[in-house]
Image (tube, rainbow, N blue to C red; front, side):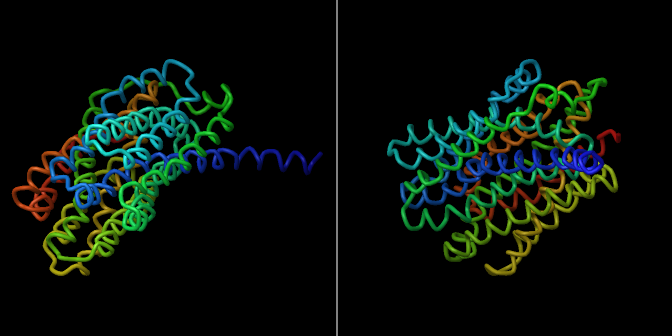
Length: 385
């Protein structure tokens, strides 16, 4: 009896972390398909002869699909029990993106990428709410879930670049199975109703600081998606590097994103959520300046890594802080901070595409050096917990 009573609490103590790692894995698979869009953009340019504006329109399609529905899906997640929604979302995200490389007309490609974005919109509010219920008040635990998304973005070019080089854009079909597999696992591992309500907490929703936080996330997202979309073209067209080294630059940026997300969670538990957000905004400016201004294709790789770290330090912190500001609406908060605000960054891609047409990819990075200044200013208005 004594051994049983000792083992049972230990099992209960570790089970939330097991669930968190499941949510992190699902987040990685889901955001793999978001990461595949910018990873595929250079190959649509090179293989299908799309212009910069047409290519950035694919990023716009993914952003539209994942941004506009997010608030409504978040409200539905908070009001109804939709335990199947995260699984359905990741399945649709994978099918839409996976099929996009198999069709020829631009309109069909654009529509499939739009549907993939809609799948992302379905996944994030439900998964964000489930992860918060598992993590409780730990920013470090929430950073594990958020880092899953960063891992997905990282794996996209690592896995896709060799396949796209060898097979062209039709290689997107190779990435359909992971979505269907993780969707099946999520359906099998849905938590009980008692578990689903255990992590919620009552309180007063504070919309004013939440709107400030949303503005910071939008600025962070514009910066992140701008780098993500144009970093390979910057290496190829401006630094005159080979495609493989350009893929290495994107991978360096995304590795930094994973590290920055985890680092941000640890920092927030030690020095506070608001201060961590402010530090991330400040560090992004010199990191992006070094990436843009240093010569040669090799030295800027270090600053691609540092830029990924700095831009992503606030990521998980913004998700948790948003749910702290809206304790009665965790799904809505996650839908905005993980979904809407992040996806809105993709809406700026066509504007940056116009800048790239006029000034080249280097002009885009000149603009991106200035964007984080807005996040620094907004960070001064955040309320400390």
